[in-house]
Amino acid sequence: MSVDELRKEQTSKPVGMGVVGWLRWGWRTLTSMKTALILLFLFALASVPGSLVPQRGVEPDKVARLYQTDPTLAEWYDRFQLFEVFTSPWFAAIYLLLFTSLIGCIVPRTATYLRELRRRPPAAPRNLSRLPHHARIDGPLTVEEAARRLRKLRFRVEVGDGWVAAEKGYLRETGNLFFHIALLGLLVAVGVGSLFGYRGNVLVVEGDGFANTVAAYDRFIPGSQVSAESLEPFSFQLTDFKASYQVGGDPKKRGQELDYSAYLKVNDSPGAPVRDYELKVNEPLEVGGTQTYLIGHGYAPVFKITDGKGQVAFDGPVPCLVENKPTLTSGCVVKAPDAQPAQLGFLLRFLPTSARLTDGSYASAFPGELNPEVQVIGAFSGDLGLRSGEPRSVYELAPPELMKKLKPLVMGASVPKPLAVGQSLDLPQGAGKLQFTGVKEWMTLQIAYDPGRVPALVAAATAVIAIAMSLMIRRRRVWVRVKDGAAEAGGLTRTEGSAAGFAEEFAEIVKVLSAGDKDVR
Image (cartoon, rainbow, N blue to C red; front, side):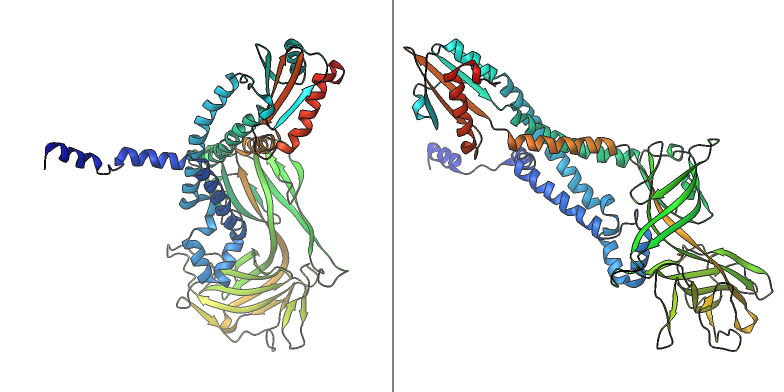
């Protein structure tokens, strides 16, 4: 084979893209409009589980209840981080890719937009009759007069030898660009909130208080730039909680929650005067940019436990998890780690409006506190495992190998029945006594500080206005040629699908050019 043939064969072989070529292809693909729209759709789609699945940062009680009712499903949710959607790595990956894609879209679009702003309308075509819109102009008209009338119609005008070029609708590109910038601003605002903001959850029982310190939270999720000193130093006390429910009317709606309010005594800062505040759903308490939302409530029956030595081992309210939302039937776990000679634990069911059924069992007939009673499901003695160093939920007792069930339970000489307020239950084998002394209510709060909240609102509003501009405004051009005292006009739109609407506008423009100043608007 000759040298020339060898060279020809080598040059005819396909050349690979190489590393640089693949990087350029990847960047072009990532920053394309198609990819940005796909990522925006994925971003919205990824947010759906955050509204369907209870989030640990918002509804920890519902997450705990799901672990009790369906632990297998809860484990799968946790495996895919569906309880913490907005802080999960897969959500962050979509967020960062969308962020990068938008930057890649905005930079070249900004350069194109600036070039378009400096560009003058193009010269008039030689034959205006070939344009989609064409008309003869009645009456005498000069180039200078046509240019003046088109300027009054807010056209950008360029004048040439015997012709006038006018263009309008530059705000369409402005809206398109600002829409992308607003989306980028929205992502930046979310990022700022994640870095410098924090949120937490806390459960407060009637009569108790809360101070905005890290130690007071049941769950605290700080941003990476948040320290303990960053928290606003406010505090409050829950003096009363009131809920109202539908009593009459449609039986299907009976017992539905109508409204509930928490009455607080608030200190905005140490030493500040106390002020009263009624906390309601969607009406948060705001102190120094920190917002406190009321997100849930339930019952906290008050129990007094006397141990086998006659000493009071526990006396106070116990928040119970809601098991049945329509009736607020709640499950309670009471622990007495100070009981002697052995620690005591109880599984109880609280019935706000207890009613006896035909089969002899008891159930709550109404969510309001009309006839509160407590069913004793089980009493246990042994080791609660609180000193083992292993974390244990307050809503769960120790494993069976540590706690022994006490039976039979005796209340006088009868089979146990629900305890009313003031009644007590003697434990067998002289282990002690459980007394039901009253009922309080609890509320769950989400306390959040988000410095990106207002910028995010501004960005979202800007995006809506910008996309409306982009969709409603048409880019259109009009030309006028004047020759030998005769004038003609032609026009077209640069926006697909808007030709029909421009026909009426073009007719009005021709009318203004023909009639003069009296029709210029």
